[in-house]
Length: 427
Image (cartoon, rainbow, N blue to C red):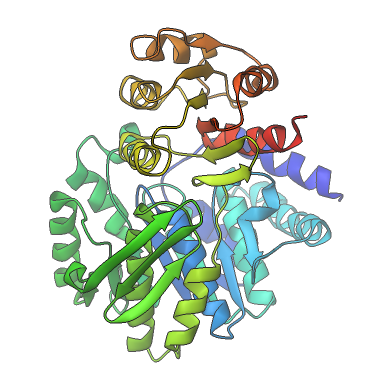
């Protein structure tokens, strides 16, 4: 099996959709020797900030000298981003060989009357096999959707279960109020683990997290905001002190400090579990961590950024960063959205800050048409235009950009990876 054939097989299983429940992945992993039971895991759920929190946590563990697996979704530029060890993506050859092995097991299970796993379940199973066979010391595992019935939650109790900021997203699946969503995400908290949540967690969500921890007898760690001293933040990162320790992060935007504080508490939780992570590993890990597609600078002249914010809370964070870091600069926005998102809230938030607004359509079956994105922006940016092709939209945006202007590609995560490549290649 070639790498291309592996991707074709994996993506072909998308037709089985996203189905709640763990029976399918439990059967598949059992047939493969339950590799997930051989892993020491930091499990991370939440609505926003999961990826950045995972990236920083993995980098801290790597800086401490541990062989560290990282599993995330979705990818921004290429599929292999989803499965990493020590920041190295799984190779094409490794992924192809692993896919063939998993496919063989699935074919046997289905032939015997077993259930066909979904795309996400297949990828998750492959990651567990890979991390176990590569003898990872630790794995940082990002939840795909929700928590309680997410395929990643097939694992035994993790060392640490962390919950980043919770808000409404995927409402048809997870619920229409924050407490209900929190209940789903708290499904990753299991008896025997140490739980962590972020500073400033929504009150209704925090109540559910506290109740879950009390019921299971889990210690809950929450960052102490009174021990935070902010120094400065820019497109190159932020500097601050926490619990008397001078720290810096390379991820842009003041909001990443919140994620960094969560990582500090994850490290504290790991120390409670007997894991040696010294202060220098924490400092260097936070400073060196990078994460694609989150206020990422992809070009300097003109300044071009990409950001995958796609729900109201994430969009509010993006807009706060625009206001603080790009104040006074002319903003040219290229935006796509998925049809199942809160378009009427998200699009106007960015449009009112844009001098030029270019609507495009992402390359996904869930994409909203470019005309509909433009229509949602018109009240705030009357000159908004639409292009069905991302290439044409980027070309139009770059043609409008002067030397001190900023081009921002944002919205759908299914668009920003391609937008990044187009912005970098534009001549």
